[in-house]
Amino acid sequence: MYRYLTIGVALLEIFIIQGCLRDVEPAATYETTKFTSAARHRSTMRCYTVLGRTYRPTFVKVGQKMRGIASWYGPNFHGKYTSNGERYNMYAKTAAHKTWPMDTMVRVTNLQNGRSTVVRINDRGPFVRGRVIDCSYAAGKELGLDKSGIAKVELEVVGFAGKVTKSSDKSVAGSSTALKQIRLRDFGIQLGAFRRKEGAIETKRRFVAKEKIRKPYRVEIRKAEDKNGTLYRVWLLGFDTEEAARVYRECRGMNGPIVRP
Image 1: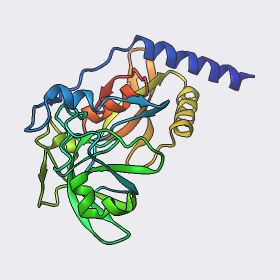
Image 2: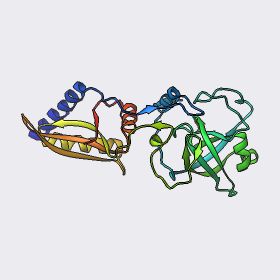
Image 3: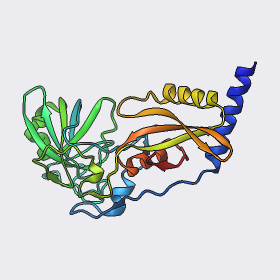
Image 4: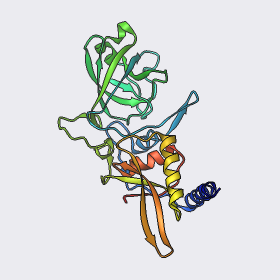
């Protein structure tokens, strides 16, 4: 009985504490690039829903890879606006990706014929299960998609802000020229604060089970002292930048403060 009473009080505490906390504004500022305005950069990194499914844009690193099915789009969209505000040019090597930042440079390799090309992300999509990228006509032709329609591909991040980097820098897209911000490692989101350790343990267990946390992210309980005694704080840690933590918090409707503990 005591165990269930403790858990109930703990859950009540987390709702009260999180409800009273105020959001911490990120230090990052989006800058206009050659292709994308600052406002567009910010808006295209927010969560969005298409056909009943919610997508959560995320920051990426040079060298990060993904596999799936590629397709291409052409004449029917030529001249229309893309997600970053520019007009789609089927003869330019661009592509649509559901979650990677605008102006991210991606090497696309057709695993079925070995062909590859480098594209710049300037649109969102494709919204078809299993497909990871929608290439422009020009890029698709280089990959052989104009004949096959779709193909299994591997994507690799090779640069940001419309430029391919030659360095081995593994910094996140948010610290490239596309986003100007102070990069401090291991930012975290507070999930709750408890007087009872049992409440912190239960909150950690529930969150890990729900979100299926994987590296580099982790959930920790940290003990602190204040004028009223011992306090157990639960943290979701592992974000490279404050902006990355903010996007994660916003997408999941969280309201805990963001700090670098």
